[in-house]
Image 1 (tube, rainbow, N blue to C red):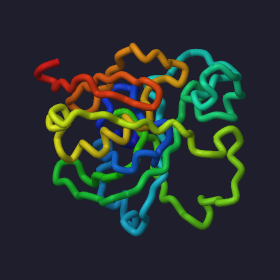
Image 2 (image 1 turned 45 degrees about the horizontal axis):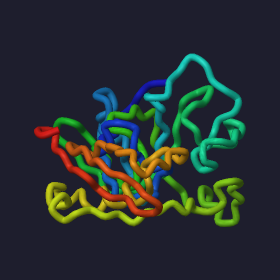
Image 3 (image 1 turned 90 degrees about the vertical axis):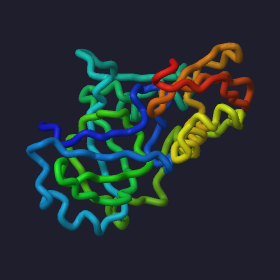
Length: 226
C-alpha cells in the first residue's frame, strides 16, 4: 500500500495521545497529501461531509512478531484479550482506523488540498493510507454492543493548572491541553502519586503528578528552555 498523506498534530510522541478518536474534540490536526496526491480533484465533493474515516499506520508499533492476546489499558493492563477483540496497536498488521470531524478543506498553493480535522488520536507525522467519508446511516449503530468498552472510561481527572504556568501556553492550545490532561495520559497500571510525568504537546513539555483524582501541573517548559 502507498502512503497518501501524513497528519500533523500537537503530539510529537505517543505519550498523552487520547485513547480513541473524538474523545478530545478540540484537538486540531492537518492532513497534508504526499506530492503525487496533491491534485485538487482528489477531494472533490468531500466538503459535503462533516466527518471522515482515516486509515493509517501505527508507525511507532511496527514489529516483526505479534501476539494473539494483548492487555487492554481499559482493563488495567492485567487482563488479556484476543488481539482482534481490542484496538491495540500491536497487531499482525499495524493498521489504525479513526473517525474525525472534517472542519475545512484548504487549497494551499504549494501543498495542494489540506484537510483541517478535529478530534484526531494520531501522532504528528503519522502515515495515512486512505481517507473515506463517514456516512451516518451505515456507519452509525446506536444499538451496538461494545463488550468490555461498553461505557466511557470513568477516569476524568480534576486538573490544577496554576495560572502563571497556563499563561505560558498559547491561548488556542489551552483548552485542548487541559482536556488531554483530564483524560489521564498515564498508563492505566501506573498509580504512583510521587511519580512525575512529562507530556510533549506542540512546542511545550508539561510535567505533572497525579494523586487520587487530582492532576497537578508542576512545570511548563518551551522548546527554548527545556
